[in-house]
Image (tube, rainbow, N blue to C red):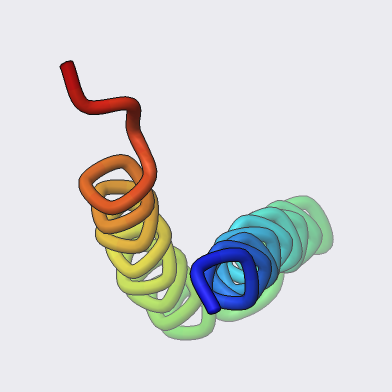
Length: 69
């Protein structure tokens, strides 16, 4: 059961990290093409939120699966 939780948490972390990269790339694309600033602001907020989720998931993984000792 513990390994299933580890795999699930790893997949969530990977998904969050990919989400951060995709949102960041979309923000760069919008900036370089001269897109609306409001979209850049929304993408920045979304990136910060997804990054926060990724960090929380990483902290949970470390707390649960780091060697005790």
